[in-house]
Image (cartoon, rainbow, N blue to C red; front, side, top):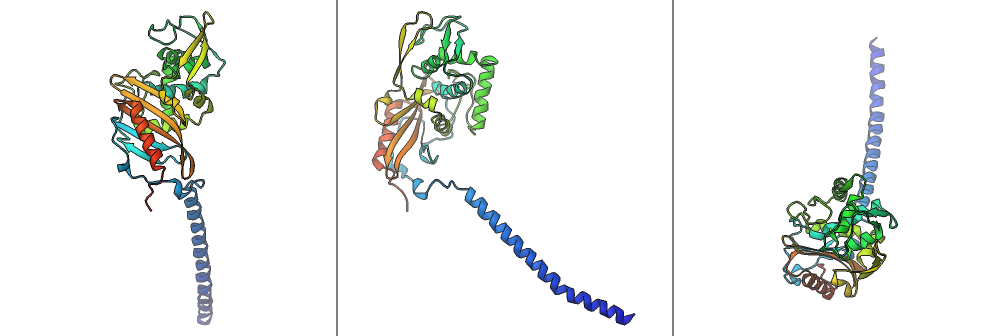
Length: 311
């Protein structure tokens, strides 16, 4: 019995090196698999289409002070912030609210869709609508975005399935979808300054997304447009309130103003830089002179030509 037991013990002892060897192989294999997973994750964490040189770090002292309480310049391609002033403070968006109104509308209506006017428009509007009138969606879109018609925005939202309340819900859903954490809408026009709010960062993000929509970009880049009156079929000239469209490289996008919000402007511009054409979004909020502030920021960025890069 003793010899048999000793033989079993010797057999067990001879298995120990083999077990240790197999254990080491297992650990080694797990290390290789883990390293591969980490490497794969790391590669996915960085946008492969961008090189380091496309992420300039600008000397903020090169920019002059502007009257706007909030401001932002963002490179559209890389989403890198080139300039910021109070980027996450909430401001009233005024009629830049209509950027989101247009996006939701473009997801819901086709250009040739016919919408019904549910009430007479205000006399102060650029186009006078009468209850029961039939209007093409495309004409309403241009009227809302160029001369910033509040009536056109209301007609669009009222014709949305479920009416204006459902339309505004969709606006806020879209804001959440785009991770606009400092943005909320109570109505589609932009008049409720105490309840509508957004930040320079959110507005720049929204504008960057909106300009990817070719239909949207076409509308906001239009200086003037002729539409036809729905009742008398007479031509009406719509003129864009964004006078920066007269400058080279400006491609949009929207003005805004109320007494509480002050002057608001979102601008899209293409600049020639050391790395080729760069499309930027410029936002100024609660400005005393939105066009001057925007021009100063754009001009400064043009002069430094993205060359103020820290080594």
